[in-house]
Length: 242
Ligand code: ZN
Image (cartoon, rainbow, N blue to C red):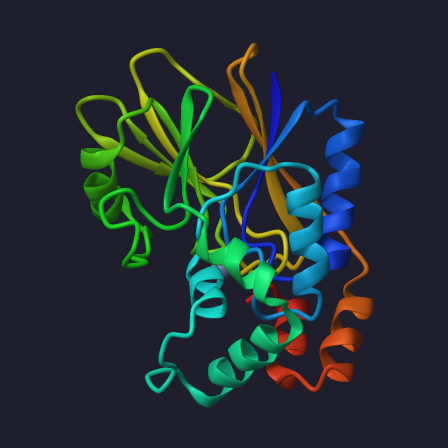
């Protein structure tokens, strides 16, 4: 089985369509989503419809939570507040209910997905180094788990002695006995200095995980952000992948 694992789509329709086209050319059988379908970019509804249409198992991201629920936004900075309120207004009550119904952790066949980290999936901690990953592994019950949230593709490997932190230079070959916590990067707002949309393909027969980076029509995404009256900073950052 070949799984496309997508995360942090963030309402970026051009990024999502580019990734889906590529995944289908790669013979993907099943699509899986690590959360944050909405927030930041201007097509939240369209991206949600695609995720639902493809019947993707999906977990709750922090933006899905802020936008689906009526939580208090007074602790948010003004740009974030404005973006969340704009997005709530784009969605129907049914759409927001779909977001509220997302689970924090899911098992997909033999692997798991979580947006942020297994040790506190509702508190949105950022896994950035081996120490953070150690806390996750304490609660990770499957050998393989995919996540997102930092928008930085990277991998953490627990070989039973140490936790190794790495990036995708070539496809990762999974080894029996190791445990893996893999960040698939962001489709809609990469933050590792590379503006191209990111996603991974997990091949469960070959036991490989491969990262792909794809150029997409970000000029259209940027003009939609401007037309929607969303903060300019959200358009600019797409150029830098920050
Ligand atoms: Zn995100």
